[in-house]
Length: 308
Image (cartoon, rainbow, N blue to C red; front, top):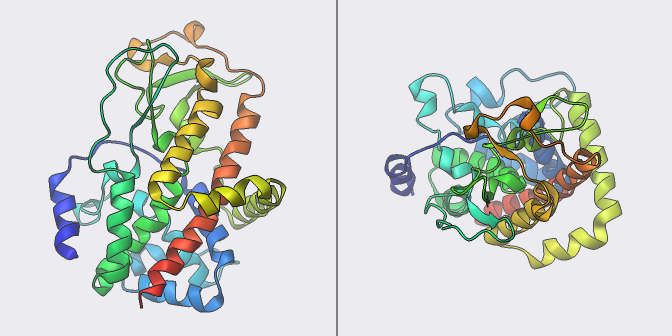
């Protein structure tokens, strides 16, 4: 298993990409924590205790209000972003391409060439990480468990699975990283960054807790829609396709939203203004996806534990 992991680190080039911000990942992890039994939580934390950054990161800076085990569990979901920076000893774990997949979504009428997704992507990495988290040595299990935590969150961020092609983006918008617009009453936004922050930005105990409760309530309201999707769509590939459909309707409004390309260096007056309801509907979509992510993360963790 360690050989597979090292080959992935060596063979694939990495590019810049961001996911749900820290709060988003903490929220999804806490949703999963609440789904698990005390024994299941304890066993997951026991695996994480073998992580090379357990002391330096996973259990560090615990705020009041969390038990140490819960804090370690939640922090596991943010480790994959933490290794983006810092010394080489940390950055050697970084894999940008693992955070996303460029599944094409095209503007109605687009006739350009659409490339296939790269071989190494969030789906392929989830398969590898889950395999090693189940069967690797103790340290590799802990490392790859953190990747499972993080990537289950990222695959439910619609723009981590979508590359939008249109006349303005003939080569794709790179998951909204090239797409610029304005929200009414706000300054200009980059589409990907806007969606990353839809679960909020404060990672305080109270802020994370209140968002978890809000999503749990939203799940109850949408249970009749969410539960059949959880039952039917069990593969990582299914989750990515769900995100693309969310992008179609809630990010790009089925082609009605036409962001400009930042590579064209647009002026402020050239930026399209999104509909008044866009931000509100996007927030609901993010909560819908987070509700599924929390339940699916808990399910993946149970499957990993079942092998031991």
